Image 1 (cartoon, rainbow, N blue to C red):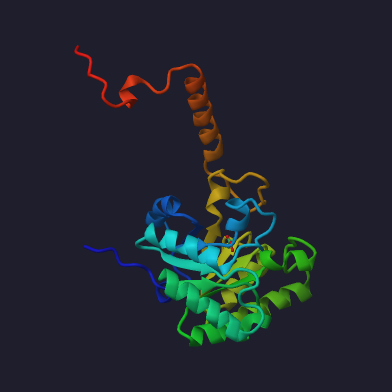
Image 2 (image 1 turned 180 degrees about the horizontal axis):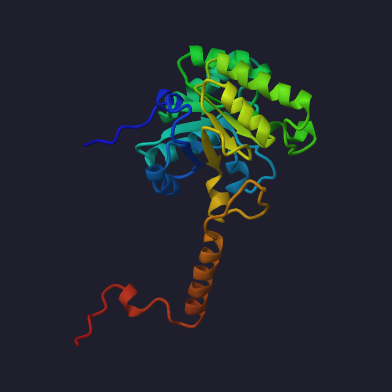
Length: 272
Ligand code: KIV
């Protein structure tokens, strides 16, 4: 029987239920590994840092996000795939947001797009949803805006900050987002906003009370170790395993043990 892919509305219906499992993927092989375990797979603009070696999430284009989105769609069959609108592709006007979201949606066949921002982005979210493209919101710490806001700062630290987070969540929900990522926010504020909101809140550096959790897969499996935020739990050190395998290969090539004749063509099989 063919696998049924989760859609944005299925994710929305999970508010308050079994926590949503969400991870990032940027290519087909990783997508195939995470898809059987996830409800939602994000093609995040974090790929700028963990794949392209850039210092911030800025610097990836819509074309790059579309190419990686197509690769992830080829590697998934059950997860709801969401693709980030990159910095510079949606902030100028709702019309710009709609044009970018439509391109991503039509050229990849993904289930939804994500964009960063609270109250100030509500009109754009509403316009994209009205154009038929489901939107995952992203509030709290906004990596695309970290540079202009003095760095990666935890949000909701004082009453004014907490009220802003509540207003942002309410505005993005009212604009029609099917769920909202809340990143880098004081635990009690993330907990409260999860209680108040009618759509799933997906936490990263937020609260166990959120309706789901998301991590960058490369962080979680040890494939990106330039820096590790407090909210990351490393389940395996795949980077160390790869280095170990590469070291073994290098030793065998230099020592003449690889390739063996069993890796070569036209070599008669030895009897015995
Ligand atoms: O780009 C990304 O990977 C993200 C997650 C951190 C939520 O936005």
